[in-house]
Image (tube, rainbow, N blue to C red; front, side, top):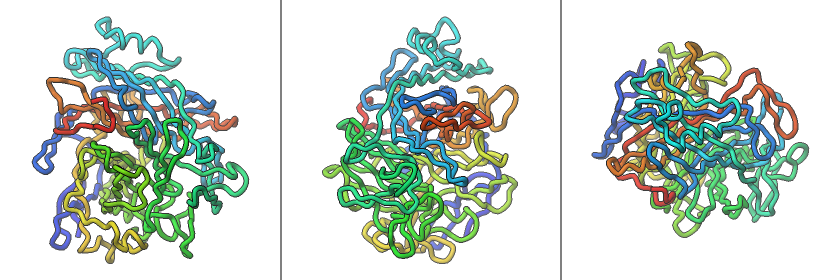
Length: 535
């Protein structure tokens, strides 16, 4: 059974096992004062609130001449994070997924797979949020220099509330990398339909004709750097995880187990994004989240929502039981099978926000791993700036997930075959899902207002974007508070810009959906990343 909620999350009993009922029927707006804390396994985690924000114009052009799309995933380059007083700098890398597209009208581009590189400056307010750095002579030299070099049309966000301002985030594009396959050919964002090609004995999605023909189709959704300067990229088309060297050339592939792979009714690959396969990852719901454990030995891979065989018929509220795989990458960068395989229950929500029966799933958009069994997961609704339909914003949260005590499905028919984890309308009694708790609520009107943002348009504020899909954790480098970190959260603007260009063609939209980064300060006791040696 489920507890029917009008607000946040409550606990109920399913069989004899305690589980969270994740139903949100009305907008889940933060009302408790900051700081806000949760406890898990005797550890207290603290959200200290939004401390900086910034944006880049939607019409910015990237290093390959296309409109710069934000941010399906992002990560600070290991070893580049530095502090000078109240100003932090580093090198930021981001993924822009598959380029501008309109699947309903069959519109795709031969968008080369790529990563964008930025110089990022996070300038915190001085004296405990006393003023916005860069808007007052007391700002640091680094912050003033950063402001002076902003792209044309960019302005730092300055709080209208002097009691608690937020700092500024400046992101300056400077180059990037083109992602290439084993043979040195660039990936394409084009829809593969039924087309395939084979490289190194692996069947991969590739348009058989027309746009992007003969290239591997890639919808890049998640990014993780490795100690040697290489990186992993999670894909939506095939649900593969691609391993690249530091130059951006493909060196290996983690192919998901049979349960995850998109297959047609005859068991053949079905990589299209235009309709669901018979089994496996739902179309446009692939490897949306991926991250290494702090010791660099485990790679966590999270699907955006439930597999087709784990979905209930009817509306999209029956897609809550997603899968998270854990791979041992300590000796092999691209292992063939996972050592861990878990069910994570996502929130369902009522799109109208009127208290009625949930009809949507708050799909997860990114993860960042804290230790060998806990990770942060960003789950969200489909409302906000850039979305169609004018629905109210209901749910956008960073949740704390703990797989300790969850059933490990590795090696079982739920992984090696396409057996569903459902029994009737619920998770099977003998399968225990991971626990999860709400942690950082992005829907905090007071916090957003200090950054010039809001839940609706008006009063001189921009509406918060629909899609928040990127996260990273970097240290606060504060000797007095060694457990404090910054959580960077980025939006995916879907290349929505009034002046848009893609593969030499215009792709204009009626609005600008600017690229945005929000920075929160958290306390995460014991968290130390050895995979990103900026701690």
